[in-house]
Image (cartoon, rainbow, N blue to C red):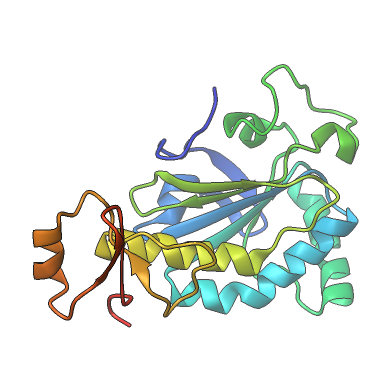
Length: 218
């Protein structure tokens, strides 16, 4: 079954490098990011896992947990973590799901249901390269899908999280290339009268459908 934005993130129980978890219970009342990998000991993913570990304090500040997934058993993850530490300077400091049976990969529509576990190459699992941003309501707020050959930009994932959290708190939208502190967009669902009440300091009307205002709470 296809997984789309605003769907409830499929729940599951799985073994991780930090013990068995129930996904929804593990998320708790905050945000979460699930990012997946085709296989252990793959070059692009090695760089990603290390960089994500270096960014973890930034996600912690935003009440957002991080969890990785790789289509290999947890026992293999331990050895991979040593390589990541050696080459990237940071070992994973967040749980990494073992998914050798491909249960989670299929549940999240990263692989077709007909795919079978066993001896598989990274190319067999190449579509297991997805980032899911999940809100406190357990709904998927955003998804990013990358090919095997392109390393993911986790600075962009952090920026996207900032946008999602700001939009959820203040009912605003963010324009192209928005960064925290930049002006934001007043959605068309908010009337001019309501906007004047909400933003007594004023806002700028570029077109009737395009109004910008200073970032709330800045």
